[in-house]
Structures are given as C-alpha cells and as structure tokens.
Length: 316
Image 1: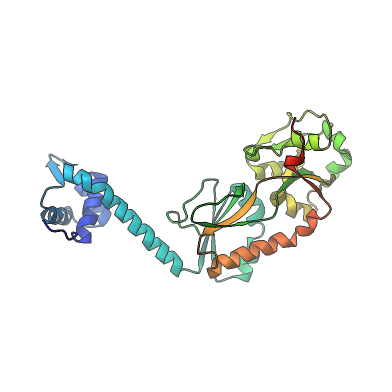
Image 2: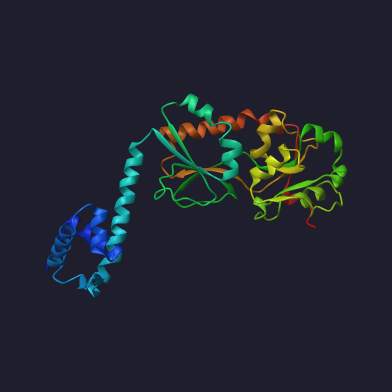
C-alpha cells in the first residue's frame, strides 16, 4: 500500500459511484463507459490495497474502507469545485451576480438598473430575488443587499446604506380625504408584515403612539411582501406605512405623498455585502458607487421629515 494519493480520475470515479451507489449512473455522469469507470475504481482499490465496494447482484455497497474514504473525498471535490469557481469569478470582471429580497429588487433595483447598464455596458448584471441567504461561494454571488440590524458577518465586507424609516404614504387624491393624522381612523390601513421580525416593531400601532393617538391599528389588509403593500397603496387601496427605500422614488416623482412629516427611524437598514477582500474589484466597486449615487439623488426627500428613533417612542 502506497502513501501516495491515487490518480485524481480514480478518486473522481469513486466519489461519483459512492454518491449514486451505482457504477452505471456514475459512468453516465462522468461521460465514460461502465467498464472504464470500473477500471478506475479497481485502480484505486489496487492503490489502497483493499476493496472499497462490494459488488452485489445488480448493486454495489461500500466496504468499511469505502465508508471511511467517501466523506473526505466528497468534501475534497466540493472544496476543489468551490476553489475553481472562485478562481473563475476572480478572473471574470464582466458578470455581476446580485442577490436581494424580492421587494428591494422590485421597488429599488428594477426601476433604476438601466442607469447602471447605460454607464457600464461592459458589465452583465444578473439578479436573484430571494430572501434566502445565498452562499457567496456555492451560489456564485458577487453582491448581496440585505435588510436587518447592523452586524458582523464572518468573511463578508459590509456597508450600511441610508437610515431606514417608515411613515404613512398614500395617493395624492387620498391625502385630501385624510388631512390629519387623526383622520386616519377612517382610512384603510395597509400593513407590511415583512418587518414584523423587528423588535421594537415599526408598525401602525407604533406610529399612532408617536402621534399620541388612540386608534385601533389592527384592521386592514396585511401583506408578507413589502412591495405588494406598496403596490396596494399605489392602486388606491389605502394608506401604507411605507419604508424609505421602497417608497422614496414614488414620493420624489409624485405618485405617492407623505402628508404627515413624522417618521419612525428603524434600528435596521439595508446593507451592501460582498466577500471580504473583493470590495474593490472593479465591477463590485462600480456597482457600490452607483448605489450610493442613487441614494444621494433622493436624499432631499427626507430633509423635511421629523424622524424619531423607534427606541424613543413609548412602549404600549
């Protein structure tokens, strides 16, 4: 038995056969004949000095040595594949994979990204709209935009974006029907339940406490997607407690209005994330600067607001 590792082709054949528990399926995956795959595994067994499979009638099973070998070989190929993808990504400055939640993608990225494409025609943008935390290595993600509390994510570079607030927004014509905060007692209140994980909550009940109003805030339609809640307000279905990032463009362009300047400053905000050490790669740095420029364009919308930090609002 040699201390040298067997050929990589033999290990690859073993890994595929152990994963499928089938020589035929492994051969199909590796685009070789079953005889060729069997030869590679026999070569590995000769190198090891003991069988790694028991050949049964129309089936195979791992021997004790095979069971000891399989997890490490599988992990080794996974690490190798991940390293290869990382090297490919480092050499690729023309494709930028961005992941963000569905609401941020729909309300922030989608209406604006043509500006980035126009300024950077050499960069091919790709989006994944999901609330799942994708793996930067496995899922080949370059940039993630995530909402939550500021925190240190091991291995990630983080840039907090603009402070987030919530405040009542509605159609301009609806503002005529509800001229005062107290008049919202008769309005249809639209609820964005996507931020109910925050503690304390930035919800209608909290905003009415800020205004020192005793109004029942339990009624009205509820949405688990913030973009759907905003869309309902744009359709005239009621008044939504809109989040800055998702309504600021509509406010700037007059589709929605915020007749009451009192806003609740949330403890959470959106963050720009990438892998540590990659923040200055040209296409990532260009995308980051574009986001900061877009945020700055709409900064004037918040100048007339009175933003009260949520921790300063009395609890019920």
